[in-house]
Image (tube, rainbow over all chains, first blue to last red; front, side, top):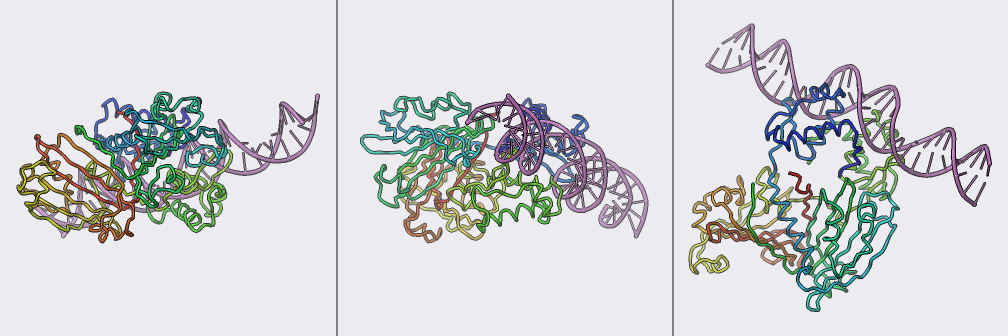
Length: 239
Length: 239
DNA sequence: GGCTACTACTTGTCTATACAAGTATAGATA
DNA sequence: TATCTATACTTGTATAGACAAGTAGTAGCC
């Protein structure tokens, strides 16, 4: 997770320049990135500032640093995984959105509880909260709970989620820059069990997603579905 | 991903102490963590060193920092065992790269059973079969079983899968054109349970994958992992 | 009461410097 | 030729100090 980036920060400018060089192709994978000393001189910064820029880029996986040798542009990681996971996530998240699927809104409210911590917000700040049930042919197939940063989607609560899915709405108003998906198999939590009508301890798929927009946590959502399967088939787009 | 941490580093000692305090319960969620200045004094370090420790802990999500206010213990994630195993993600993406994982080959054989049906092969045709266990720090974290079309990878059985992952090998010899992933939460099957050492009925993540190559089913694989978390975080399409 | 100004404290950024530690290369040596 | 060595360059860690920026509380003022 990133701390706020003051846009004018010098180390940030250095980062941006290097990212630009990489994205523009002027710095190709395995190319050598200017050393800390060089960057410091170029930007009239101290070496520590250049160091911070490079260190953060390394954490982001854009470059690779080898002590005694230098800094090099990282080979683009095969993020097919990311795409696949995202697709699966989307499958799960949007399941039923397309197929005539009934949506029940259980909650739509403004909270000021301490969920803020999970979202990286100031504790005690207000947070939007919603709970939805997705039904398909009478059976509840998904329980989804969302916490939304009001700063990112001020009108989140005013939407009619029987018409548009929260994911769709949020994607429209808040350009997601970063996302984290956690997929896990869990025993159905008791507060969800009564809706899903599963047996106690029944395996459920739990997808937790956090998204960032403008360096803020935008949403924090949990989707729980009974252990049924989520299938994804498609062309393999690598490279 | 962390760079190597020189074990004796001072900022690392500060990190460890705070982690210990949190893990031991002496610092509870939302508790205030000593300020940079305080830590610096306590460890006879400079403020920058304390700063580095706190900044990295914040990146790891253990603490939350608020400018002008202070540093606070983050609320624990639902699953405290933050192993952050990425095996499934890695499987999907064939992040062949570096594994710290030990691999046990349980089976590597030629079968002629009727699994062919699932693969869309002529019944009775021969099929390669392998079972692997992935261990990490002593614990089995994944059971994976594969059926491979001999026509697509004739030398599948001759590989040393403690050296190269089946995914890596298969991708090298058989260009995958299409893939289907099914992800589901299941009760741990009994024949797998003895390896994973899970409780009976423990939720497990099950990933089933079929791949096609040259219009033939190339592989059919099942990967089962105890319900721990599979996390994937990354940027959205940023080039 | 309600407002402002001030203060104390916190984190965020930055500098200039220092030494440690890892690597590569050229040159000297055996 | 093969090996050691000095050197230059790199990143890693650490320091002491500085100012900026954000927050909370307090005191004083209207």
